[in-house]
Amino acid sequence: MLVDTGCSRSIAHVSCCKAWKKGIVSMTTVSGEDWQCEETGIVRLQLSDGAFTTVRVSCDCSEASCFEFIFGMDGIKALRGVTVDARNGVRFGVEKSEFFAAANTVVAVDERDFSATYDPVTNSWTAAWKWSEGKEPDVLKNQVES
Image (cartoon, rainbow, N blue to C red; front, side, top):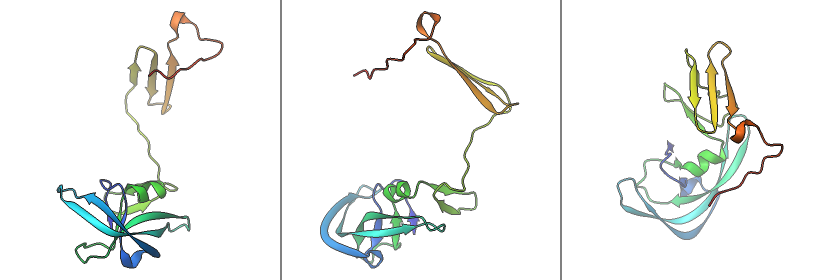
């Protein structure tokens, strides 16, 4: 198995596909070469906790690949992410992973419309909006600018 965050779609050897059908899928390899799979199929991806999902993959029936399965970003997203630890251990899903940022000193951000300060003693951030004319509106009227 190869975990490839540079690959948008997962690729499975045809022996891993539950059912596959003919259909040319063209891809570009990292070296810039054109490459084609002649089949597509469905695979079931299952975590050790039993959670699973299915992903449509390109099926490779050639012997050129050294991997039975290449996890692309579609499979990684379907399993809610991937973590690679310092010992190259790979874990899919985030149910047991914790991610955070911390600092030993006060960190301050001061922008045109907000400010934020990180306090290392309480390990927390405080944010404040800078309202026009110095007072917050009764109702926010957000707009998407085009």
